[in-house]
Image 1 (tube, rainbow, N blue to C red):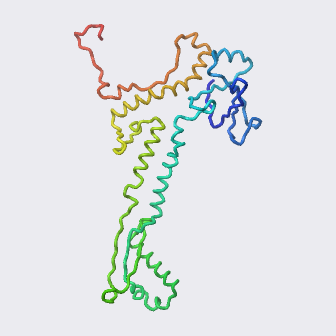
Image 2 (cartoon, rainbow, N blue to C red; image 1 turned 180 degrees about the horizontal axis):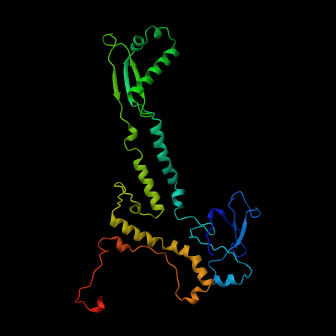
Image 3 (tube, rainbow, N blue to C red; image 1 turned 135 degrees about the vertical axis):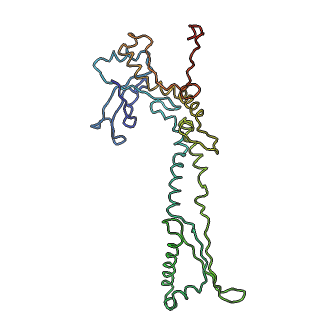
Length: 304
């Protein structure tokens, strides 16, 4: 029977004098585990590069359980290969992409820039609060202003976190010495909705798709800035390329099954036996390619 193990639960044993790891230590508690841990299972491993792996296993009589290493080689790694998409992690783009939604979320929740700017006469406070203003201490006057400003925010910005009210005061005119009576209310532009971080998000998304060897057309992503499209023909061509580029990874996945076929004698009973990954007929995804041509009655029988 063939069953996969979670890579995060697996650790290699020490290399022998030939540089091979002949044991796999399986435990779900790494890194808080070791070889002698009560939940550690020691599994003998096969050498997939041996001349005759099946025969080597047959020579180890009495053993019924083996680990078959299946991984795609990476430069500088022997037994702990790095995933082909690991470059996106090392480049910090994953962390960068994760921060953009959080930053936008915080901006929408806690806007720092006010949405409304109100300019009012300095004398307004005395006229509005009357004697209570004249008798109030500086701290009490500040509290009165804050409460008054909160009421203005409720009127002008009724939606939660939709923007605050910024109040400034002006006194007598330096020209004629008279007190200014005019109020001015200015609604400020919201800079948080002008497309900030969109280009950063596009750059990060393109980097992520490239690291995954995934064409943007396959997931319906399109962007005029990055020149990506997601039309029908683009999807078919992208899928064809993706299937071809994934061939090495498919071969790695099928290696244990091919070993089993050799060990159990299937290949002897059925010469040429092999296993493949089945994919849809891409021609049928094309409207033109899906039209079945029917031969005319007067055509040669050999052409039918």
